[in-house]
Amino acid sequence: MDSKTRAALRAQANTLDPIFQLGKGGINDNFIDQTNTALDARELIKIKILLDTSPVSPKEAAEDLSAKTGADVIQVIGGVIVLYRYNPELHEKKKTENKKSEQHHLKKAFTYASYKRGFRNEDENRYKSTFKTAKEHKDEKKRKSAAKRKSLNGK
View 1 (tube, helix red, strand yellow):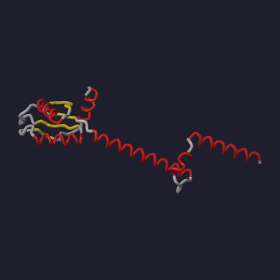
View 2 (cartoon, one colour; view 1 turned 180 degrees about the vertical axis):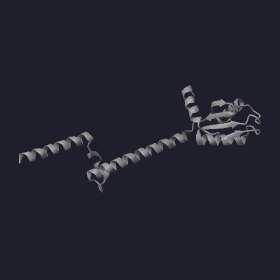
View 3 (spheres, rainbow, N blue to C red; view 1 turned 90 degrees about the vertical axis):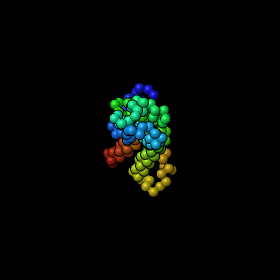
View 4 (cartoon, helix red, strand yellow; view 1 turned 60 degrees about the horizontal axis):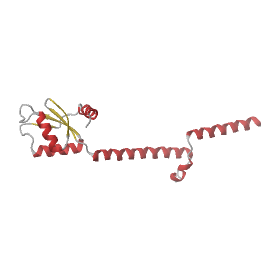
């Protein structure tokens, strides 16, 4: 991981609250399972180490958790550890949501344009190719108004 990515993740983690506390129980299987679940759901997590009661130092705990969960250690400051593990499923969900949102906006724009052109109840897909660009539409309006003025002046 490069330094720019790490810095961006540190900035994101700045506003996060710690979701786990590591105390006198130390790092056990249950704690690792919970950390794995949290990393799957969030990618970026913050863990608080209780310095008075924890049997391991924060740096040791960070290295141990990193090795056991496959996460990257973003930073260790005082008694706080920030871990990151990329989850492709979360990014796929975002891509499909963005694609759906984009399709919705296109459909909405198309429906409005078809309404303006009078194709309210017609099959919209049939008329997709008949829409003109904004410039063509303006030019056509200018030609029609010029023809109308010319016919009024000619009478």
